[in-house]
Image 1 (cartoon, rainbow over the protein chains, first blue to last red):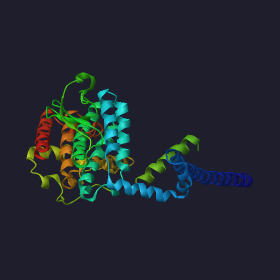
Image 2 (image 1 turned 180 degrees about the vertical axis):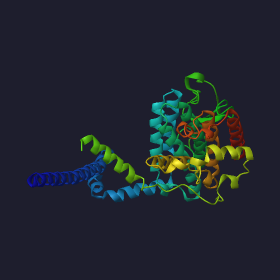
Image 3 (image 1 turned 45 degrees about the vertical axis):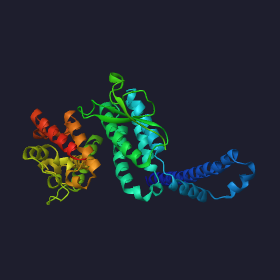
Image 4 (image 1 turned 90 degrees about the vertical axis):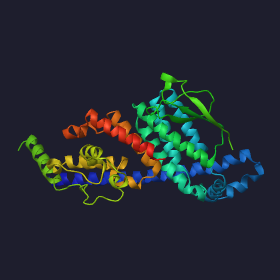
Length: 221
Length: 151
């Protein structure tokens, strides 16, 4: 009996040690992976640039390079990634596709979370935070509501207002059409933005695809 | 002792043991300055409905029923309240930005109209929290007015 107990303990100990080793191996493995990826990045740049510049780029530590690009962004903060994600979300709802809308919503949330606050001009910081916090909530809800497209559309209406304020603050890098749907939200109406002049209403999808009108054309800055 | 008996005994022990681990209660004595009733003039009839059907999960003060101490139900309830307050907390309504308040009023009206709130799992036990068609009208109208008042 004692022997059996001892052997069981031994087996457990062995198992624990092995699994511990494995996890640490995994960690090493993943850190190796990232190392490889980051090494590849500078390597791909010389293709676009002069080949002569290649060794110089390789010598620059990755950290410094990242900082340099960060500084560049400070000068011209752009909401382009946010607009892109919004448009794919809007287009998913035009097509009555709740699943695609949810994944676009999640992507928009990730994009908003990734925004480097240091890049936002100081005088617009507070306003941006206010809008972004709100937009995150809507994006999150849209992401969580597969099967409830009506609810996703309600949040799109709020997102439309957030985007309107963001465009007022920062401008847009692509021409956008500000459209208005008079029926949504119990006749209070709702705004949406489109990359095309043609009306495709995301609030009702196929039910009333061409309902609504262009209110404003916003030219890229 | 048969294996079956051992299992039953084991479960009973666990069940008794978890009764000693109670989650923190969501209760506040004071009504904070950020409470919706101190930020806006809430009409009496609206307030009565909010108290009856909303505040248990959407404020810092829950009216707990006697059985709320029985575990593991208490954990389930605490989880629910936490989630509810994350989405909307009437006790902290004054802390929300104007944009957020406006959107919350709009969402509240939508949720009531769609019958999403109060949650059916909540009204299953709290029968008096079920909203009558009149209650819904009162809430939707007030939420709508409030939404329009914030610019």
